[in-house]
Length: 368
Image 1 (cartoon, rainbow, N blue to C red):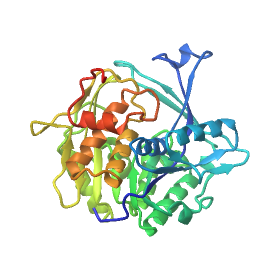
Image 2: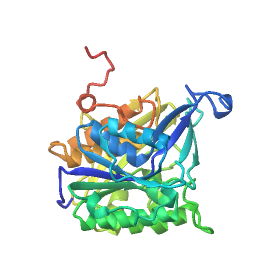
Image 3: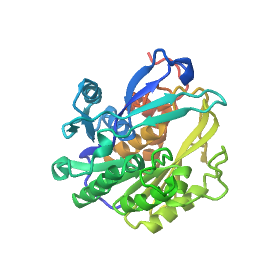
């Protein structure tokens, strides 16, 4: 990876929403009408929260309505250590909403979006003073979800990554393909639209994050011997995907790929591979020299697991004194593993807890 600014503020850009979830593992129809759990969530806000929780400085940039619920959301982010001083407050607008039905065993989780026309879906990018936002920052992060929300949000994402690159920041993008969102251009499939927009963003990107489905759907790049609908993973095949991404986009110096084997909704094997240009890929977690994924048998909530990985990776690369790529990836994969044990989008794990797991201490015994 080429050297950019380091140790400065991490800025993330995207939409934060109200998240409604039936308690426990109830289905939508079992709680309608009835009590729902309301929290806040969104990919980029989750990354900013993780960075702050681990001890770094972060800022979340978004657009929100000017009302009490939006204020409550910002107060929670602030309580986690995230700066929010450049949030754009749109008049006569609303917050995006999404509903999560948490799966169990062989029943998959479900997500329903209600994001249009939210305050964020109506942005164009010109609402934000990017030069001021990037003052003192060293890293900028956004995701494919932002570009998928609306045509204006896609324009804003393209503008933001270009301004960040011009300001000398390291730019990371999580591909995060969401078929239910890429629908803002009539006559184009979700994959066609994603593959039209995402390359425009990646031309200004240094670090790409994603999984096998993201690469396939947003870039048309597939790993060999992998079926994204099954639990079958060929870990070594992802190195070739990373090489192809870096070949297509010369600015990209590193590709981090999450490796999820979905045995059931509540049982996943989880790990990651980090490919850096002109270096051999590294895998995590490792045991006795072999890639040995975390076995997560009782998932509490998998929504936000990928964002926890991104947050851990960005923190380790931008702030941490981790020494080498293996240590960086170990921290990121451990952070994500722990996030699967926490309800809600935000990863409330501490740096100490993550480092204990990365060091192999994951037996769950009481810490006294």
